[in-house]
Image 1 (cartoon, rainbow, N blue to C red):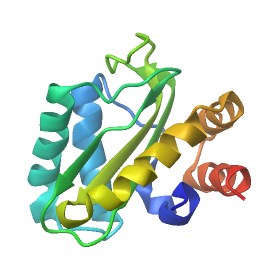
Image 2 (tube, rainbow, N blue to C red):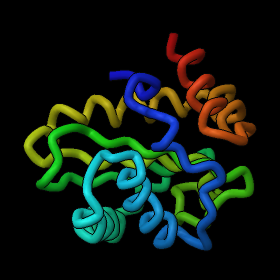
Image 3 (cartoon, rainbow, N blue to C red):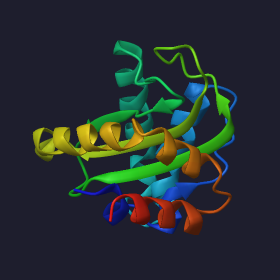
Image 4 (cartoon, rainbow, N blue to C red):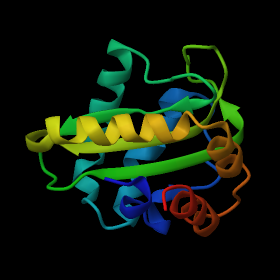
Length: 153
């Protein structure tokens, strides 16, 4: 499943302003509420699940990428959130670089295994330096979505 098919403008946070990864996770948990993807009542559960996953092992990868994710009950469809911060957010990435591209995935627990492939496809897409460079230059949700659509066409 292509990220460009899943992301809507209201699921893009540009810029993602967070002092550290914990604040970034908190913000990511709240973005889908404004998009109508889940109710406010699930925010605490989503945030706790993202934090628990992050404490078990960092989701900060290399090249300024982080893909925090968690499976929860109470939603029926995958909810992706794209956060961009050109300066980067301290995220304890594998290479120590700040995360400039943060893609949060809130996964329905019942469909967890089905979305392992989605996670892998996102990681593969972001392994491309040209994609990363184009994304971090985006200043609004529309341009970020346009980049994703172009590189996944």
